[in-house]
Length: 268
Image (cartoon, helix red, strand yellow):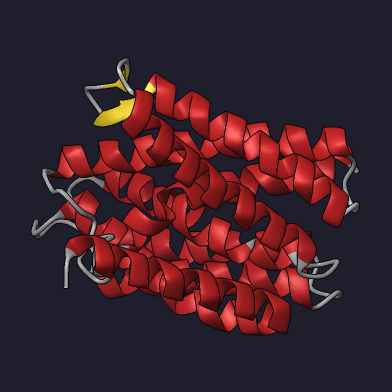
């Protein structure tokens, strides 16, 4: 099977599982994305520490990320479990992990804490807040994912057809300004259609969300590319045929999801 066929099959399975879980509700979605969060945290640990011995045990990184993701997700499912309580629990997890770092007498505790914070906010938080986007039904989360996928598709097609000017060649040589603009324009077009089908947000709000998702998705893609370049690897993993690892597939999602939620909360 060709690499393109593997990529298409993996992408189709990803879309089907995501949409199916969203329609099933926040509990199903949480059960789907918890292991994804754990795998993403494992890849982030690999990008940060590689095969070095001074890094924390990978099990601690994965457990901390999954526990944080679950607590944030629960705050969107169980009404008494407010975001403030979730933030307190996340702080408690961070404190416990900090104590572990100190008792293990690591040579560079600042780097340890920095890596832990990166994993919590870059990996665990975005997967956890999915339930917040599902609070009023599946339409907002599905609309967000459609915007995200549209931006990726538009950037890819426009980049291949018209790409001449490199966006940030020292980070990602393949990304072009023309591809970025094409992704934004196509995403804005889809947002107009979403405003007709799902009027929970006005046309202006959908367009605003589309622009924000396009910018943050591209930024997330570039950030993950910078992580990989620093680690000296092509992909964050090899779990997904044709795509690489979890972080390769969800790079744009990781920054765009919190940005989408912030936009919706701000506009409401």
